[in-house]
Figure 1 (cartoon, helix red, strand yellow):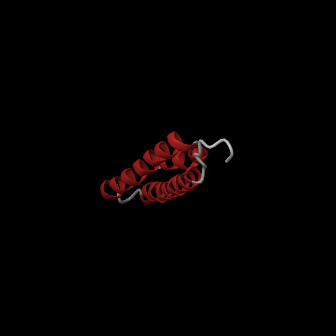
Figure 2: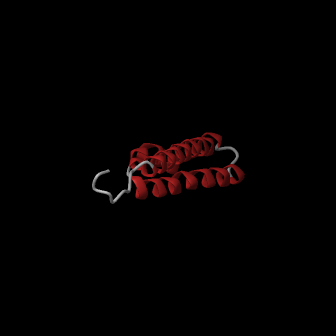
Figure 3: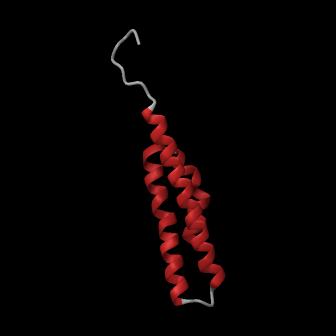
Length: 85
């Protein structure tokens, strides 16, 4: 659950192009993995592991959208050495 909260609260980091996108994938992925482990080990603590899983997937979605956005933005930068361009 904590990794999911940190991944969601720290979503502004994904607006840093390269470091943020890669870093933002790790924390929510950990939240999803740990949420599923918690579901298997502690089924009675449903609120904790369910929150971790949901926030982890939301964080992953934000990170993937950010990576797509930055890929499109960098693909549209003109790389011409022609001074008349």
